[in-house]
Amino acid sequence: MANQYKHKYKDTLEHFNALLIKLTNGCHILNVKTRPDGYSQFKHDGKAIFGHIFSYETFKGSTNGLDVHHRCKYKRCVNPEHLELKGRKEHNDEHSNNITTINENKTHCVAGHEYTAANTYYRGKHRSCRICNKVSRDSSNRIQQLLRALTAFNKR
Image (cartoon, rainbow, N blue to C red; front, side):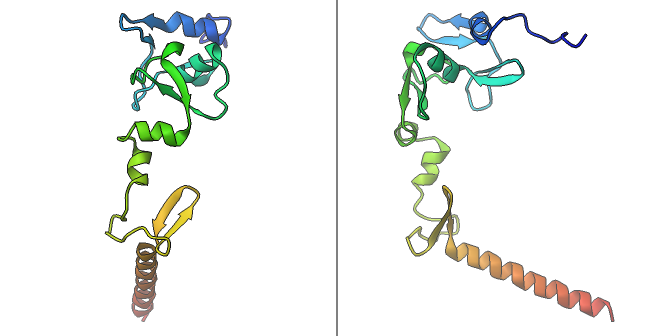
């Protein structure tokens, strides 16, 4: 009973090939539900595996930390001939509607303050506006003061 959900494939490549569909345009896709971000993913031995990354690493070699780029622009495609490696910046630049690229290209925060060296600080790759952070901190402190005063008033 414990092996009831065990797949019938001896290895990941056999499982991958069983899911493979070759389209007339040259793209290969996996017969799996597509993720919300458009990529195909399959599970093998309980582990989720991105189809395009598995395909690249199996048929072309290591990604060496680079992004696997779809030359055909079809995120579901796993045809190794349609896949190539690109650095993160180069990959993101090619996808200008990508959220990372959109955020990198912003020159002002949501409140309209310009991102300058003096007004911007970074936590890892995340950047924040110093003015907005100060306003938020000051507002929070003021709210805490008001709550303490209200609590003291209600205790009378």
